[in-house]
Amino acid sequence: MAHKKTAQELWKELIAPKVLGSYRLYELYVKYTFMGIQRGQWLIDTLKRFKQLKGKRVLDVGSGSGGISIAFAKNDLETVNFDTARKYTIVSQRWAEENGVKLNQMLASGEEMPFKDKSFDVVICSDVIEHLERPENLVKEISRILQKDGMLYITCPNKMSPRHIWEDSHYFLPLIVLLPRKLADIYVRATNRGKRTEVIFLPTYSKLIKMFKKAGIKLYSFELENKINEFKKSSLYEKLSGLVNFYSKHVYLKWISPFWIFIGRKNKDPQ
Image (cartoon, rainbow, N blue to C red; front, side, top):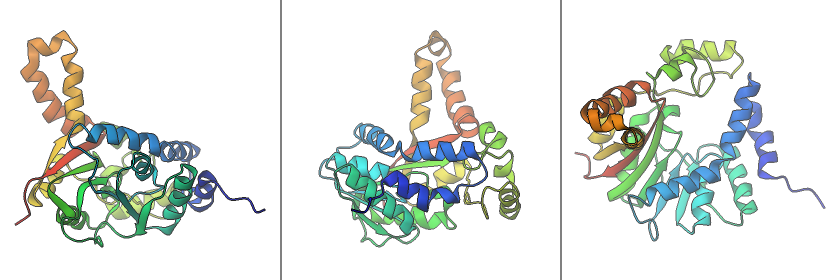
């Protein structure tokens, strides 16, 4: 009887060869990928603070190897997931089988989603927007397919964070986030990280907020809440709460935090 390859074996065969030039990068990529189900469970627990998920339709945009979608399926939550690359859907399908669940998945693009208006109550967009040629199209599509008062979970690297300037989170290369795209492509090739950079869109905090606001979605910073709660545990907060809140919102969030986590709420349809 022929051996049926595991999800990790398929990942190494189909995806790992694309991760070049750094053993450290490869090892972290493997670890991050296969912690996807745990990250998905954390996300479920987080979203439940803001919205009842039972009976709601969830969309996982650019689902990659499928960990988040598998977590939702294991919790009996109605979820659709898609990615642009067939190799990822192959891995995610096998991983879902290993976990005793089925995925409702397809090949599609976040820049042009094959769904009717107001089709979903919750949209997940984790590690996606920074890879798109036309991120504004993704924002419009998310707004279009979200129900009124629907919820969005989205993550994005902070281009201006000292952590990312010193060493970015995708290639572990210094200063690459500050380079024009053509120079970034040369840098990636010269360091044997790939043929070109796959990190295309790195917005400022204000630009990202405004893009979604224009589409009728207000973004709330999850890590800003966490940072302020962290400060509240110290006596410093009681004495300097105004200064601490200002620092958290206008310094830490915009300039220091390496990675943004936003919860978005669709309040209205875009004009």
